[in-house]
Length: 289
Image (cartoon, rainbow, N blue to C red):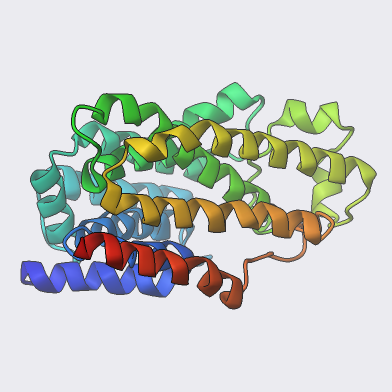
């Protein structure tokens, strides 16, 4: 596969499976978009190995497949449609391989770890599954001169905020996969058990538990907000739009009265378009000027 074809394969994966994120990438200068698509596609391909809905696959088989995938990537192999583009992105932007190693470590945890005792325990997983995604993206997005190191903590916080939002939205789906990303001690704090969540009944205790998770995610969005001004100006509309739309998932959870155990809430297409359209105009004008 040629490098151009590999980048196009990554773009198609992003367009097909990451609607909100793909919409945000359209706000980037065309030269930056392929690298973002490549990073997204690598994460998605890895996630598919872990979560592919195939009851015939054992945990041991998934572990072997994930290990082989990680080895192929880290050794520089390009025998998958997305790998050539990912390698080129890593080299072009100088992205440290340790971020990918940490990501693969967290993906391995998904195969064997079904729940987390405390938020500190969950944070170990979230570092590799979310914080390093923000750190991978940062060299591509770019920063104002001399501000890369200063921007890194904000990139980590935003990546974690996105992940916690996904956890809240996907509680029901994760339970179907026999996983729970809400810490056990926090369930106990609100008088909720895992069986209560599996029953799909949203009572007062469950509402208070989910509201607590929403508050934490929003605090991380607020913590990450100052980092926006440290980004290269041509990348700000993309991240601002992604942050707005992901944050509105939390609004949708509240509007649904926290009914996320038997359904998946979402920000509708009209709202996504309403947020993105002005940003597209701003991004176009900024590139022209």
